[in-house]
Image 1: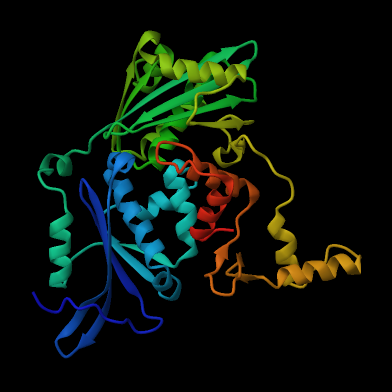
Image 2 (image 1 turned 120 degrees about the vertical axis):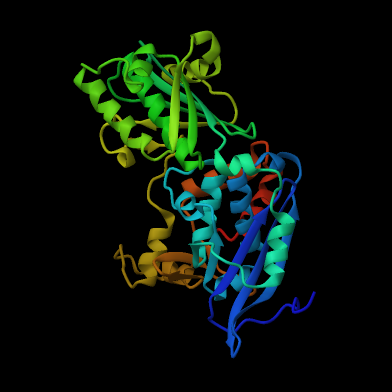
Length: 400
């Protein structure tokens, strides 16, 4: 083979990032395009790859592709900071990473990647022979059936109502067997059927954020199952509004099947919903939310808190000082803030921490910081290390 020597790209020119994943590895190649009398030629800049092990082997295909982009951004950060990066892909990476409902590791990755100028474009042809060989080596084989029919995800939902309040739960299971558990407490007047609908809507939103295209939904409520499957009519006006929300979410999937099951087959979701309703401890690894408004109202306004709350954003005072705004008449306080703000800069509306030799670190809120540290420390893919090492690891990811 020839013409596989890496080259140096021209400054401020867009680069292409080709990513691929196999059952046991992810890889990425960074290339730049040049033009000569023969036409446009793609030349490699750098190659990166990682062999998957442990829990990473259970990632879904879309998670592996997203993880390949993340690995490339971490290992080739200087290229990502100085060039526009285009990612040709057949996967809906842009929709997944821009989804505000994304949670778990997808949500963590979505919070890390926006610091770079990355665009996702449809993949058409691959001109470079090196890229063609690269994609052929890492593309999984014997998956003709999966190309025709997407493997369905399984979703268990449940709602609980009692004297202590109401709660809802959803358990999402990927084709690989990965299980995600969600629970939420309803801080508004609700009935048992409303709680069941809230659990179903919670599960549908989380399934879409995780990249699911087809769903097998198992629900304990015969009323909700009958209304969604068009076996019953929704005579109650409030339930009719919930049914309209479900119909709107249904259009975001290629299709889903809803199946009524007895309580004995839905015991795990039942325990989560009752724990949320009674405001008791939840199992480890459960994503917990509190909502103050029903899903029939504005969904973005429904989520009020995720366990932790904070007051004033610490970044605001620094950003105001950099922009010449003062919030106090105390001259000493103003000078101290100006001295502190010298170590920061604002780029495209985002606050960054400067360093002598380190790259710019994106400043995040206290709530986002706690979520990031929790993601790094806990879970089956977490790093169970001490507080000092954990903070250093967060800094290495480009956050402050």
